[in-house]
Length: 312
Image (cartoon, rainbow, N blue to C red; front, top):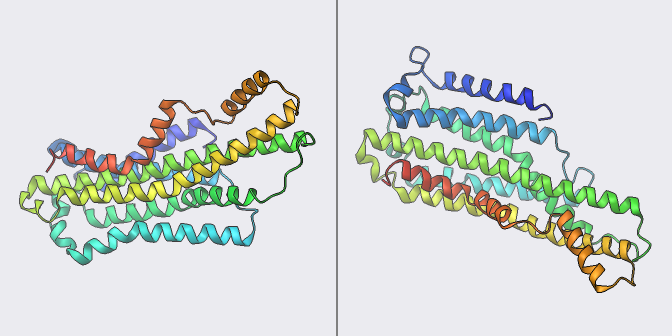
């Protein structure tokens, strides 16, 4: 992640290698010539390993927020992370119980998708995505747990705050804020692309076998998008709210340290606006919209795949 040039070479290489592995050895490129739906499926499936590589490199380059925390904090992060993935796996467990997989994806789906072992490969990509997302989900919970724990830490009285400690607190806050948003973006990209790939597979099947529309209804895909959106919101929104509360408290400490008790109202107001802007507590409407779209990415992906399939 520290070398943009290396990453710009690695990502296309991973994409091309994945594309070759997904297709039949003697029929490389046929999927791109025969059907636009098959082309989309292969492209999305090959894009997933690229996202996973970037996600893994980002995780390796970021220290865990509660690495130096208490055993209770680390235990809470582990419990929340495991619970998140158990809930995330529920659709993959419940759906086959209610409707055999062969009714959704026919036996000849490999030939329809022009991808040998299509079901196995897509399932493995999903499992691999969950594995590389574990550090980032854990980071989101770790940020939340650490910030909650920091509220109980005693702070110095106004006017005697140590400047170096305050600078370290500001730097730490900005790092946590950046880490939370980066983790959200990577988790959302992984989940959204997997939903798009599932929708592309659905479109390939329905294009060849319209009768499968009953067993693989559009509402099924939308329901998955809604469910995964709720899961994504459940890890990001509480952590963000806690982060903003910590930022407000930190901005108050900075104001008390820099202005003192005898500052005028004008100076206090101007300084407060500058401090809040510096800490990222005054995000623009565009930034808020970007975060909202990122959280809604699984739902957006499910609806987009239906539109590509002409709403069937």
